[in-house]
Length: 388
Image (tube, rainbow, N blue to C red; front, top):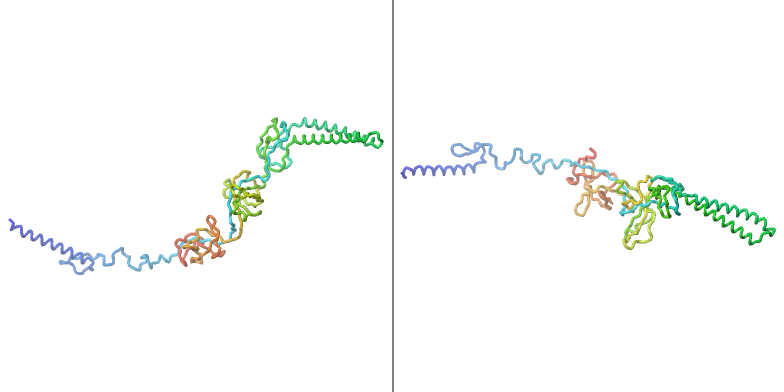
């Protein structure tokens, strides 16, 4: 039984050895050209097997466009957006918070206790200087004026007779002096009665706009009772504090720019009108007052305002901040000349949000790249989208 199996075992071993040998041979000669030497029996690898060094997609041979360094992509123009350099007004800015005040402001009150007989104004309307606002009861005052006038008339008659009798010595000097004194006293009483009568008519002390009415006809008012308010807002005063370390930069006439959250984007311009003589010992700041024209009446007394004090105002080259390309401790911009972008060093000065002053390195009228600087190289080709 064992002798019959030996040939089968030996045959299996021979087949296995030949299979391993064939596998090793096929692996070593896999890159051979088609029709080359193959294993016994002519069974060689297919002709489409990749050649040595040729692995990769078709068309990836060296020197073909898009293969990498040395290709055509490096010479393509970079799309950019340019902007012309121009001179703009520039100033050192000192920012502060201020409060709006009317040019003239007063609370309308009465001098004496009295009854309101008439109201001659409407809430919030403009009035001229001397306009009647409120009338008070004047019956008693008119009666007093009539009595004082009658007494003065009698005194005038006595004075006239005394002047005629004095030369004849029918009237003594002391009697004449008494008549003169009585005449003067009665004249004073008339003036006082007229003044009280005038106080029953309350007038606007200056031109402006009245506030809300706070009294009614028939109401009793006393000295100090507020009838209404009157504000002259044709000019608005803005009071703000400036730190003492900026004291040397202050002077009357400096321009100011004022803004309010009530009017986004609107700037009101004026000038410094006065500077306080004392520095506050607590805040170490100096109070400054600016005046702004307010013909349209947009600014109201009591408004919270943002104030920018402009000093050393001048014309300068100001460019967008995104045009600056920093390189270590230097600043550069790309200047567009035809279809080429030239990298140029610039020296900067004052900075504002979104913009920067160029002290030297640029001239007005030149065009600089403001968008697309990341991909640019010195003297590289560009395609200016701002001109296309």
